[in-house]
Amino acid sequence: MGDCSGDGKQEADVVDQTSRPVLDKAAVPDLVAHVYGLQVTSVKTLNAYDDLNFHVKVAPAFTNPYIASVCPDGYTLKILNSVQSRQPDIVEAHNQLMWKLKDGGFSVPYPVRTLADSEWSLQRLRKRPGPGWRPADDSEPAAEHVVRLLTYVPGEVLHSVTYTPTLMFEAGETAARIGNCLQDFHHPAYDALDSVWFMTSVPRVAEFTWVVADPARRAMAEQAVEQFCRRVLPQMDRLPQGMLHGDLNEQNLLVSADAAGRRHICGIIDMGDSHRSALVFELALIVMYLMIDCSEVDRLDVGGHALAGYRRHRTPTALEMGLLKTCICARFAQSLVMGAYAFHQNPANEYVMTTAVNGWTAFRRIWEEPQERLYARWEAIGRQNDRQ
Image (tube, rainbow, N blue to C red; front, top):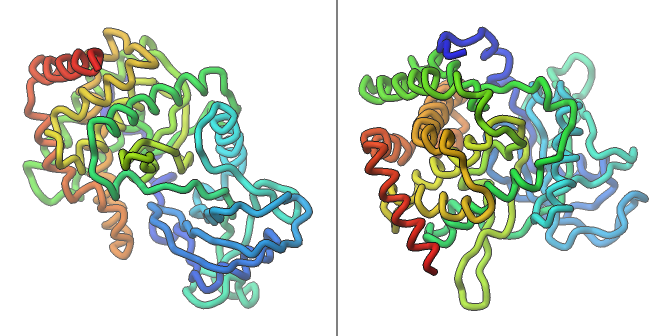
């Protein structure tokens, strides 16, 4: 179980530039009218890793009998890459998970029904850039993509604001609350779900480290992967399991300001990497992403604030705490290496390199910090939060 050699499946689910949808935003109104019977009044392109996302607003009048009223904040038109579009059962699972979180009090997007009375639609999109979305005929290159229209959740992405201890604390709270809310959630599509982005796939990162040009960085990533294989994977059966959002990063957490101008976490988006796994991975992931763009707080203190928030809703076991730093470092290696590989595959998609800007610096800080000293910092922060 601790083998770091990989399992030969990585090429099957690493999305490359041929899998990513091609759609000019000028074609969005016709696509939305065709599938949803809504009249688009504005279109804005949103960031996306390997899909296409657009924020659309629509006119009050519509022809869709399955919509009671239009969403005042608009919608996110989400077009999945062709790899995930071949897994409609996963799309259904993601939709059900969104409804579960919404019912649990989270501000999350949820799917709108199509003119065909479905929560998603499979559409054949042309593969060449241009004003239209439909291929002219069967001879034109095209690919089938799942199209969904999700209610738009208002707020600023966390990445766009200054990180504060309060936001870090609330991000940790969010990670724990998601696990609690989804404790009894199950969909059979999650049972055999696999992705190179899941932390159980960290061993597969070793197959891609060649893409990291800097020898010191490459060695650090390889060592983090090896340590994860040796220390964490053999303990998987002993680690508490549950449903994870799977990608609680700075682009998928939304914030808003209260009357006094203080910002708080207000919403969660993008459930595309949700899966069932060890709960500690969710905490490791949020700490890792918060460390990357943190500027007002020392990067090594980020985990203390997030952990304090997490503990308000769930207490990590001693085993989870013992492995947390290893998991954070492994996630750094996974995100940075796979981001570099995705950029190598598609240099036009600069969004995939967002993590790399400060990521390697943050990775080295936590990698070189002794665990005992790091945890002492975090415990001191936790005691301070308890007194507030």
